[in-house]
Each structure stands twice: as structure tokens, then as C-alpha cells.
Amino acid sequence: MDFLASLPGAAAQGIIWGIMAIGVFLTYRVLDVADLTVDGSFTTGGAVLVMCTVGGMNIYLAMLLAFIAGCIAGLVTGIFHTAFGIPAILAGILTQLALYSVNLRILGNKANQTLSVMKYDLLLSLRYINKSIIVGFIFVAIIIALLYWFFGTELGHSIRATGCNQAMARANGINTDKNKIIGLVLSNGIVALSGALISQYQGFADINMGRGAIVIGLAAVIIGDVVFGKIFKNFALRLLSAVFGGIIYYVVITIVLRMGLNANDLKLFSALVVALFLGIPFWKNKIVSKTIKHNKGGAGNA
Amino acid sequence: MLEIKGVHKTFNPGTINEKKALTGLDLVLNEGDFVTVIGGNGAGKSTMLNMIAGVYPVDCGNIIIDGIDVTKLPEHKRAKFLGRVFQDPMTGTAANMEIAENLAIAARRGLARTLKPGVTKKEKAEFKELLKSLDLGLEDRLTSKVGLLSGGQRQAVTLLMATLKKPKLLLLDEHTAALDPKTAKKVLDMTQQIVAKDNLTTLMITHNMHDAIRVGNRLIMMNNGKIIFDVSGEDKAKLTTADLLEKFKNSAGEDLDNDRMLLS
Image (cartoon, rainbow over all chains, first blue to last red):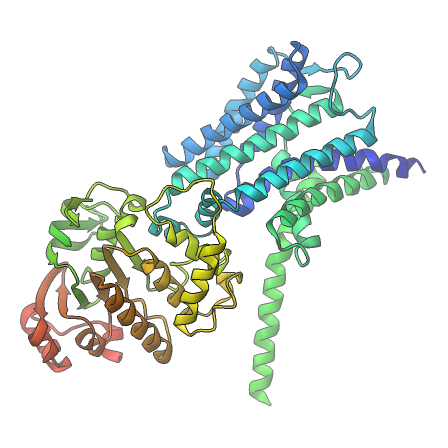
């Protein structure tokens, strides 16, 4: 019963991290870039929200500022990648490293800052898990609806084309550099928004809260693909499957922690799980091509 | 319509892999010219097309399209003048996107990408009619992902995309080379129809000497990054493949060494 009682909390966390997975989906799946900025921009979002709220700002305005701060982080990575010609992964790592200092500054040179739900009017909190789940889903619905609209526009189409085939995009007059920057800006804005929600949920922002965020985001995207890939084809549903992936991830984590996994080993466990899920499509292809070869050989002999 | 003046291009200069791809290329295309381009391996045919399209910068020289010097313009800005079809059927289309979405992207070549709908209902109806005219059974598959199409179908869609918004210049880089003979013929017939209908200025690289002679009003032969033979009108129509091989030997002082060309 103790275990069942912890599931709603896992779901709430999963939904919020699922929002961050939507951001990862935009870079990893749509732009075809693994953007490691998110480990930093997630924390930036949390830090900005906490400091603004503690400073007396309206919570929605603080959320907006957190989003914009994430957008700026994405912009920096985008400029490193396109104007400096740095490979996307390295560009993201550089921004992420730089953000560590920036985030410390935002947090007033402290490693963490608390944000009590008793003192401030927060949108969600682990004290009110049911409300948090509902708020999380409202954010998911709004974000997916906006992205669904955006990627159906001329600009959205051109960004998808950029991620799919750059030669084709340029041949059709699309500025691929500009589009990559827009994608990175949007993605990191959403990631920061997720960080802002998490900091409210847990009641503090911590300089290390984003560490390994990219792995969790990828895990959510990949789990979503593996579980729902066959039935969810539509763009909006694919975004939703990333959120569901986040929920599944957190439920599984909760289960393994209950089963006695040392919390310190959690990141090791997460990394191995993601490696495993990334490997599955690769192994699947290998097995399929082997079977095809085998069958062909058989037909030839008969 | 197109003017290429003294264009040089050397890849990997100063290294063991140095390759002088274009060595002072001059070419003038008149409006409505349909030029076929032949030449040996590494003659600079594809490099010429890539230079026109702005895939790489030129070392020196100028490229002028329709009176505008585009030498310094990046690839995506030159695109508004150009329609391009590539040798690899994968290159010209976005595999993860629908046929209609690909066509809609091409319909906006040279225009700003705004927040208006990516494909309108009106466009879908137009695309359907256009695809019907191709007779490939694609008119009922507007929402299919292009990745599901065959190589020939993808080349046909790419050709449609390249000409949907009438280009100043159509660049075809061996666009039938990767297709089986029957499909290749179909795509080439389609190319001729579209070029004739819109009176497009066209530059078509081919490895098939029969096609090079049969198609278009002008033929140029390249070797070592230069044009060594340029023939048009009546003289071109009278050419035979034997003439071309001999012409090559006389001008270049060696036998034509294009593997695919000799096999075809």
C-alpha cells in the first residue's frame, strides 16, 4: 500500500519531466540534433522562477521569464553551432558548462534556494499531488496544442525539413542555420519551463537539479517511441507519447527504489536503461536483416 | 539567362588530395536553352552545377543568373532562381514529410516562411491535379510520407518540386542515373514535357550519350574542368555517339573514361 501511495507522486514528477521531454523531442527527433544544453537550461528555468517568485513577482510572469531565459540559452547554443561551426553536441556542452556559472549567479551565489508553498502562491507542489497532476496536464495540453499549430505553419514545415534533409531544405530556399537556432531556442525554452515547474513542485531550486536531464529526456522520448510508436503516428500524439514516456520512467524509478535500489546508484541505473533502449532499435534491425538473409539463402537452396 | 565567367575551383588545395575541379570555366546560356552536359569521370560536371547552386564557394570568377551576380549569395538565397534535381533520389525530398508537405515547401521557394498554414486546402487540390498528370498513382497519396515512395516516384516528385515555382534555371544532375531503364525513360520524358511546357532554361548532366544527343537544343562536353565542345541546333541533331567519342579523343587527347557512359 505504501508503494501504491507513492505512485501519484511519481506520475506528477513524470508529467513535469515529460514537458522537458517534449523539448528534447524537438531537438532529438525533429531537428535530429542531440542538444546537451538542457542539463543547464533546466536548472536556469528553476533558478529564475525561484528567485523571481521570492523577489515578489507574479508566478505567471516568473514562468514567462524562466521560459525566456531558457530560450536565450538555446540561442547561445544555436549561435555556437551555426556561426562558430561547432558540432551541435559540443556547442551544447559548452553552453551547459557556461550555464553552471550563470545559474550560480542567478541563485545569488548559493547552491540552492528554497521556495515554500506556504509562503508563495505556487501553481503546484508535492504537498498537493492531485492538483499538481492536473496543472501538469494543463501545461502539457497547452504546449502540445501550440507546437502542433506551429509545426503545421510554413515556418514549422521548414524547420521539419531542415531536420530531415538539409540539402533539400537549402535547395528550396530554406535558411537551415536560422531554423536550427529557432528549434534550439524553442526546445530550451520548454525545458526551462519544465525546470520552473519542478522547482515549484519540490519547493527549491538547486544548482545540480538539471544534472542528467538530457538522459531522462531521452529516456522519456525513447520509452514513448517504443511503447506507443506503433499507434501514435500523428505529431501531437508523438509529443504526448514523450510525456507518457516520462511518466513511465518515473513510475519505474519509483518501483526500483522501493525494491531496494540505492538512491545513489540511480543515475547509473538511468544511464544503463537509456543505453538499453537506444540499443533496441539497432539490435532489432540486425536481427531483421539476418532473418532476411537467412530466408533468401533458404529459398536459393530449395 | 546564365553566365559563368572564369570560374576556378580547387578542392583540398595544397594537399595530396588536391583536385582542380574547374579550371577557368566560361559558359553562357540563353533563355530557353536546354543544354545536355557530358564528360568523363571528374570532368567537373557536378562541380559546375554545385557552383551555380552555391553548395560551395568559387575560388574566383563570377556566376550571373538573369542579370544578377549571385557569386556571393549563400545556397538558400540562390534557391529562388533555381530548380534542382539530384542524382540520389533521397536528396531532393524530405522522407519524413508528406508528399503534400514536400510540394508545399517547394511552392514557397524564394518566399519568406511565415506563420501561415504550411499547406492550404486550395494547394492540396492543385497538388492532386498535378500528381494526376504524372500518372504515377500518387494523386491519392498526398498524405503519404515521401520515404515510402520508390526511387522513381521520389525523382518524379522532386522534378515537380523543382518546377512548381517556375525557376530561372533548372539544374538536373544525372537525375535518372539511379533509376532502372524503364523508370529513367519515364522521368526523362516527364522532364522534357515540363521543360517544353514552361520553356525552362535547363542544364542537364547525363551519362547517356543517346539522351545527350536526343534531348535538348544544345550539348556541351567537359574535360578537366573546362568545356571542350559546345554544339547546338542542327549540328547537334546530326551528332552520333561515334562523333562524340571521336570529338572527345581529338579535344582531350585521350579516350573518354566514364565507366557508366561506356556501359550504357
